[in-house]
Image (cartoon, rainbow, N blue to C red):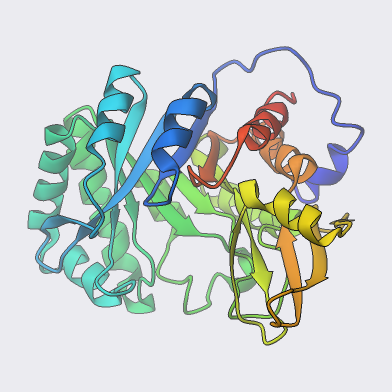
Length: 337
């Protein structure tokens, strides 16, 4: 499947034929300004939402993440009969390997019981586990937790999505990745949401956020271990804006064109990664900035990997960052057979 993008480049000649089963289009509802407006405006473009407002503690208690409970969003999703998943993170002040360890070991049974009750109480279609910084030594523990949780959710007619970092054969043993046994996780979950974004982040030197070459390598690895029908790739509705000292910030898709117009720059489309980049001299005195992001062409190409690989669907991060053009590009990519 490697270098699948090359096969898809012939003008993105899309077929009108529908796939045999509609792919999952999962989007994240996190605490970003404009999230509710985006949900209510663009809801026809997705069929599942991960409500990213919840954490779990070392003793397995489910808590809010500090943001106001998204009551209006939950009500809207119920009224529109859009599948909502409670997204549960192992965050204290930051991603916590200690929480992941406790939930997967000493607090396993209580955690699973609480997660099932939480999903039922909120009318969720299931749970999305987003545990990051899982320690290498917890590889088997984390897999066991997901297996036990999957069985418990399935017994109640609920589903399980597990978010995992994007990596390939060359970096599967890296300390940031080894805690995630994709084969074991994929056997237990309904979907693995591969976080094929943040290839490069502001604390590193500038580079693509979701390069197609990197994404394909990660998908090649994932589908070698897990049925493709259980895999979701991830598409960012954002890029990053780096200063010359390699510090930077997130740049929403919806804000990018205004920045381009403000500085009169001409973005460069990088054919090797199917990403967009440009530079500008900031008026605030912070020097030269470098931006890497997506455009309609790159989003369509990366969404088209769903059918090229036979994936279960795709995921977009996150509501409030995008505009109508983002969803149009994603839809165009998904329509390619």
